[in-house]
Length: 289
Image (cartoon, rainbow, N blue to C red; front, side, top):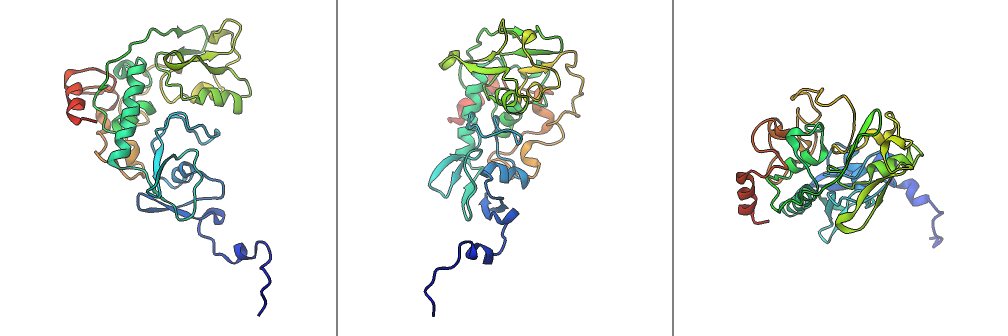
């Protein structure tokens, strides 16, 4: 009987394929998810139709890990950002649990109070990932006192406008302009609460920048910070992206508290996310976390 070591790659050649390109599988909330070599947990879950909450991830862009909304439990031992953590064979991943959703809800509440988000009057309402994520996580009010910062609105561009009141610093436009458009129109500057989105142009305004309406960066914003002019509210309520079904209903696993009905989203009726109605505040206060 020979003790010679097998030739390199021999074991891999004998192993049966268990996922896309023989990458393997992991479990996500009890469901087996296949992954390809090099894929992250979020990439594999997204491709398999299992949404993981996120704000700063896009399938066409590189990894970021800026928003931390996609943090999941891995093997019962640690929390990790699903958008930057490589999928591993046999890993046990928890996406939706009361603890994780409470953490996400807290992050969302802080994002809402740090900016100026008034969903019923926003052109992005019904198509806003921040708004829909808040409903998905069971957020009913801001919980904290709103900052109401004084931020500029830049309407200097002939086709686009920039409202930094709504910017959540996800860096999607920064990365899109650099990685896909090759223009480096946007950047992030400042520190702490003064951190803000910057425009790379002679006067710091959108109108003198290289941004064009058909650039990928012009349409990648998940909120209402970068929008086209003369197209506000053209899509009626009921036909917007998140009106037909919430995120968890699109092949996902559902939330710990259950999603809010799509008709309630975007201020179509009742208390809107981002508002400060007394009932919403008392609801959050009773939640205690």
